[in-house]
Picture 1 (cartoon, rainbow, N blue to C red):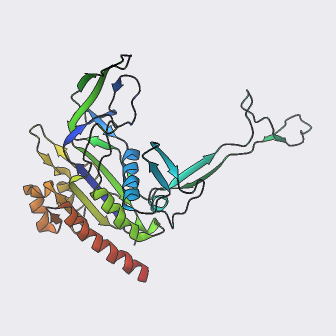
Picture 2 (cartoon, rainbow, N blue to C red; picture 1 turned 90 degrees about the vertical axis):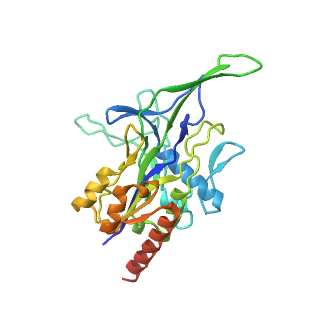
Picture 3 (cartoon, rainbow, N blue to C red; picture 1 turned 135 degrees about the vertical axis):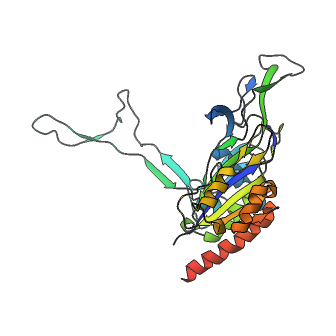
Length: 316
């Protein structure tokens, strides 16, 4: 049977500001969505995936898409060429390059040069349009959109620039003091190099700045708490499992319920970080859940189990 890795990560507490990159105008905004009857701020899965790829580049992994800090833009090592056996980002994160049709399009939406079949006697002609091409590989690592653990309070800062004045001299910055949680999933047998799952876990464990207004704000996206599951089950059953009450206490009550009810095998679960100190988690340890106070310690333990299971699958 095929193994699957699922996880849910809770970041450290910090002040998030403008997770959308370069701002336009004089207001830097946060992305928002309605979540459980309140408005929350959110960070895109693509921002998280970008941070993972950038970390691999910094650590010297073979990546096909790199970031140029001087030019402030992405570039490909081999333009138009993808190789998931060599490049970890091509293998783990996937890729897509779409090419438009070669013909120019006229005002009617029809290419200027089309190949027409002979017109039938009934007068119904048929045109063959040359289609565009695409090269694509679905990403093995799937990441959810990160959602704030608390409701957005609408905090905003005002500032002004010195020197020459223009319409951007007076500016506003939206901010939210909160934690974010997000989930991920991957099936290592879909990788060209299955052992790269270790690099994925290492990246998620040490993920640095994902959201931020250029270099002016730093938000630590590394895990404060983490729940991991290594299983044959196709369903994660643990996404967005963290909750925070009005007193600021974080819990995983619904995950505890699922484990105690038998929907999740406790022997498949690793819980690490600050949440491991909660009494409800200590009770899960008695059922077989692996509980660690440290994030890195838990990940190393899981990585050893994963590599053993992957190697046994290959031998079988």
